[in-house]
Image (cartoon, rainbow, N blue to C red; front, side):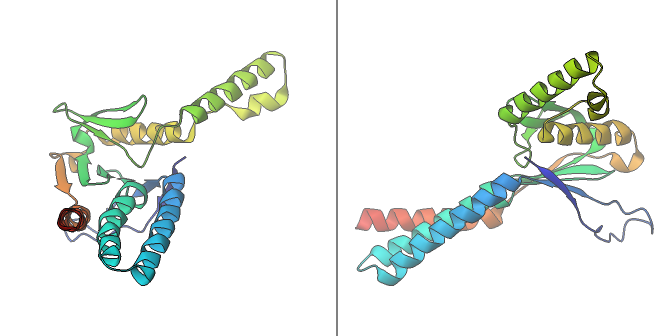
Length: 216
């Protein structure tokens, strides 16, 4: 499940006063919870090896921590989707993709949620994972409400259609894209930046770990 949050707009000197856009922020609560648990477990095991280990064990533990901690953060705590009236910004494990709405061709939902740009490139929304179980549950609830409405149950009339949380997020993003794709401020080319701040430590940890294992 993914929940939206809001943060104050970041001032931009290129924007006239009063036109700053507020980001809608989407993250995966289950991913964050899993990441915190994994970090706690890795930290506990690593600290125990560093303190109690003998010989090469502390060095191996340190290299493993340098490798694993950035990867856990990248795949659990880091992913987020930021959307405002001008653009969609996707923070995936190893990349940050910025897409002005004018460059977006479609937002698709299947076994994963992804955005397709007009050049044909596709980018997955890691922070908005698809839950087939949630979809099936939402479909059952909607079918039940429809059946009750046909029999005259008043409560069902107020329930309205039900959608899985991540599908609701994709609906919101599609609405933003359709509303603002023609706006002058929403034009521009997509940009992709690699997350070297994540990749660098992980690669360094992997290199040190390999060296220790080979020379051991």
